[in-house]
Length: 255
Image 1: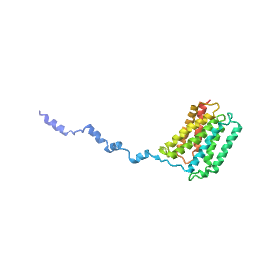
Image 2 (image 1 turned 135 degrees about the horizontal axis):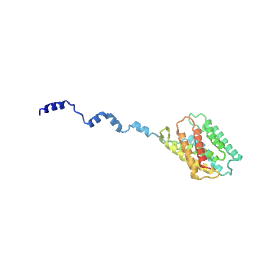
Image 3 (image 1 turned 30 degrees about the vertical axis):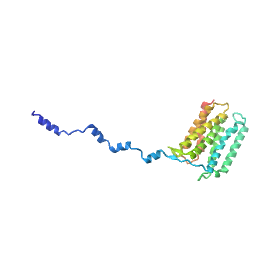
Image 4 (image 1 turned 90 degrees about the horizontal axis):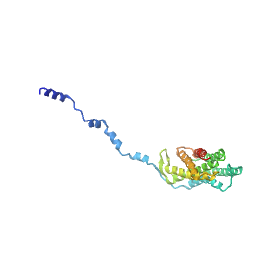
């Protein structure tokens, strides 16, 4: 037993090791744990759930929507006019006259539908008509793509503003001035009416589901382009996107 006393004294000099759980607990800042499991602040919740309130459209905005959507009825009028594919010069003359008269009227009376700080509408009206005419001229024998582009501009883009302003809703993450309501209205109305106008003008005819598919994909692309933040009028980029996507799909899927 003579070794017991030295062993005991040596053991007393060895520092005690804390329990592993105590080491782990001590090494993790309690503040970080509390922050990780804390509920989101009121400010962050408000940012995630930002909504746009609906509003009653003014008489001026209603007139603006009517001016924007009315040209989209042109493809329906062509259903009742017998014509060849590609279009003959007589039909081209009728369509060009209608478009020119519409553009002239809209420019002369733009002040009645202009929004505050909107000086003139030459660029917006020219872009609207120019994209449609360019699509018709560049695709002889596939004029239905031009009619689809016109319908997407008229009813898709027009519905985005109409439904977005009227009903409001959750704002888009990339553009808090526009709502999911407007985006979905653009896609839905553009797909339906763009597809119907494509189907109605196609010669030889194509299946309606295929036409709506082409119109839907073109509307989907154009809707996201329209919703991107920009201070410029969106008629040009919406029309170009719809025409480009529609042309590519038409060339791939329609003989």
